[in-house]
Image (tube, rainbow, N blue to C red; front, side):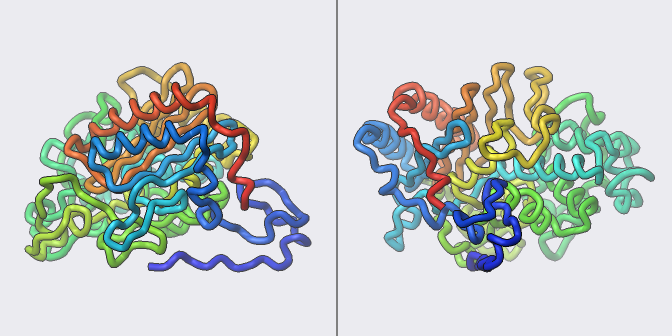
Length: 422
């Protein structure tokens, strides 16, 4: 795979071209869309006052045997700091840089939720819209449904992990060989085939009565985006979410090292992590990072790759701070970040506190990602290309690290905006 070339818009100055981040710029600063990944380097954030912070990050990485990590810090929609640590691809001698692309795992759910809110603002759906049934968005799957509780599921239930799906018998999105055996499939199912099979099973709880984290729910949201927009999921997200937010270098991940995007990191499992059967039922043993899961097939539940600076730019476009114009209206931002109670997931985010702290995490083998947006508008983002034995619980360690770094070094960050380097 190769990063798509972006055409130069020679008439931009005459056509009122909207620059990255949504700023109208009819003169000269942006003649074509440029990803910050093409511009930023480690040298820009190699600052004497912050070398003690670098030492803390390096020590953390050694303690957890992490090959590489990328850290970006934003405040007031300005990118203050962006730096890569360690190796992007040790075997090829590539160091981690700010623009290195990394799998984002469940941070992808935030991107998918933004897409749903964009469609709601356009009037293409409402989060109270039923998913199945005669007036449902995905009613083409009704013939396969055997449990009437499915007709109670709304888009909001999927967003909040309240639709009735559990992982009691394994996660169907990331246990493809088991799904193939269960339904006697000869090949790995795509999203539509998986949906036809899974909706034939009864729900584990009544929609809205409880919550249980569900990757399948966000796979359904990906199908909903396709149906409501009339476009493939990736096309809609690229055109209507990412590029409008000034993000030009996000992509759907490949499953194998050979499928990596230009500038993408290599992924490393933790020590003593054994090989597993290939996800497609071939019977071959493969690395958990490459072929152990159908990452591509996870779509809006976990398939996006991107850099931490562009991820920060995306957050800047949905945070209610208008230094970088938001791509969502105020009410949509409020809906996404409203805290109902400690037992209820927000929309797309993993946790939103009453004081305004928002968190989104993601992890699978070879990847750990975390976004922390604090009440003062500061946003700290860390993504690694190495997993640890703690699995998804490693997010607690990275969250503690970011709090520590913010408490000790926020006052040393320079007053600048690296986004403006484009």
